[in-house]
Image (cartoon, rainbow, N blue to C red; front, side, top):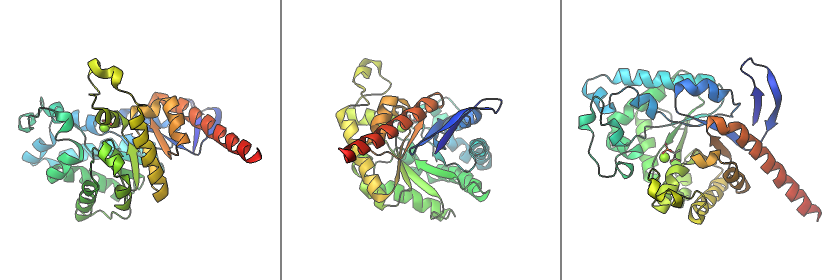
Length: 315
Ligand code: PEP
Ligand code: MG
């Protein structure tokens, strides 16, 4: 894994820093793809599609009710394609839709969205997709066409899974819809404590990779609303319970040879990344602006670990 510092003019500004840990980047907007690729990241560890879809101002259900599925599929296909084109030959993990229902409220079709007391614990992520397969299918159709067009660097990541059966069900649907699931990378977000606890069953169920969504994992482990300032002092990425869940899950992934990554905000914190690398994480996906610093942190941490091990051997 190498990251060359390349200027906008294309001149190489510094020798690439080589790290054993893949350093990837999070992308939320197709327009940011160029800037994300210019960091020299080894791939995209999280491509959020919420902005691509919410920006259309129509709910997925609206497209179905109007018989305009093709329009939705084309928008999604084109948005993701821009990012795939910016990362040729590098993995791009696209997360299936994960928007809470309240964010769809004020758009066309919003009146048909369920009214929920607590949308963050409600009908979002893989739950929504499994309960409304026609909405899931529109997304999968866009991915299927991208795979068909030769973008074999595209991987899919399912959000908010809490049980391996959800992964198995999602995979079965994708297969039913004509995708050769043995040929594509299908992974899960580990962002609910239950999925961290059951990581071995996810590995046995055949996930290609797992990625810690620490923004939600912290929230759900500590029962702290990530958007509530009143309790933000208790929103602790390094709470021992959070670290234990992550550490144990990384160890299991390593045992099964499953790539294990992080795409939550904690992956942009050098201190946390040092700890993650010491504990064996295989890749880290950071915000665009944080990639150079995280690359440097990874190189320094890996070097220190090697020197420590040499010193121990020679002692
Ligand atoms: C997370 O939960 O850490 C994550 C990356 O997803 P989001 O922030 O989009 O919920
Ligand atoms: Mg999340």
